[in-house]
Image 1 (tube, helix red, strand yellow):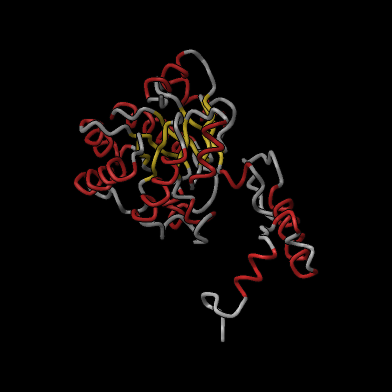
Image 2: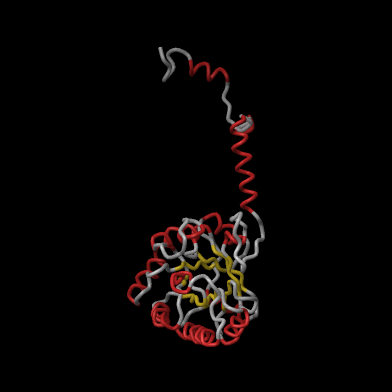
Length: 282
């Protein structure tokens, strides 16, 4: 049975810290699900780590639907959240259509969208229609062209606005909220004021849970690691070494070996090659 938003709220109420991870395909979803991660976010970060875009802005709804379907198929217990990409929820009507497609066409159990008080009416309408919504404030990647990639909310005015945004998102009915790249002290203060769980990324230990990008956590980049990420493995190096070894063995003829090949009786092969056999040349 899948984790529900009610289960997530109970975890927060019990003081259990909530691990969340991104996944973008069937295999990564299987691994995360079997590891017992209660929530999987199919983030529009896939635009950068899977599709090679320079930001999340070019990601389309169809691309999100494609990857979210794969994650849902690969998971059995985790609650799957599908990101709504840039300019797919600019109005209430558009948000309803986009979120409706995400829920109906992928089997996801929730959606996530970025923004503060300005998107509260959109969140309220989606929740009213039965669509669980996770909010997202602080550094919002879809607004990178406006705010740049930097910590948000360091000054009093900006911090107060962020607190107000978080409370508006909760009041609108969101079941949780991502706090990205904000000071740890501010994240802890927001968490203390909200009933719903906060999920931090680069926001310190005071949040109710944490989310990390699959590729960052596993070290699937050989030359890049965000400050807020901890590498639990260095798979880029290991995978690179494995691929290099494979290519070398193909070149020198040591792969495939007998143990990797099928065989047939010699008399069957002779018969197949004999004159008159099907496909043989006279």
